[in-house]
Length: 163
Image (cartoon, rainbow, N blue to C red):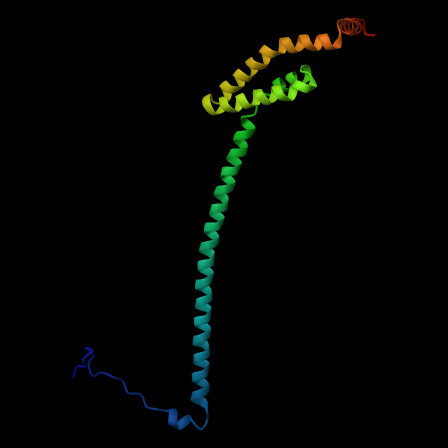
C-alpha cells in the first residue's frame, strides 16, 4: 500500500532496545556521545564557513590595498620622472640672487608641470632647458656685476698662474 507521500509500505521496524538497556544507562550515554559528536561537527562546520567568509573578505581587502599601492607607486614614479632637469635648476640657483632664485625656480617648475600634462615629459624638459638657457646670460651678467669686475679678473689671473 502507498502512503500519501508516495512511499510504499516498506518501513523497517527495528526492535526497541531502549527499554531493555535503560537501567544500565548504555543507550543514554551512547546517544549523548552521538549528540556531542554531531554538535562538535556542526560547530566545526560553522567555524569553517566563518573562516571561508573571512578569507574572502581579507582577499578583497588585500586586493584593494594592492591596487591603491600600485596607483600610489605609479603616481610617485610619474612625479620622479617628470621633475625638471637638476643641472638646469642648479645653474639657476647658482647664478640668480638669493632673493629671486626660489621665485624663478618656482615659476619654471609650474610651467614645467603644465607642459608635462599638455605635451609630455620629453618636450617639457626641452622647453625647460630653453627657458633656463634664455635666462642664464642675464643671470651670469648680474652675477659678474655682483662679484665685481676686478674680483673676476683677479680670480682669473690666479687660476691661470696657479696662485
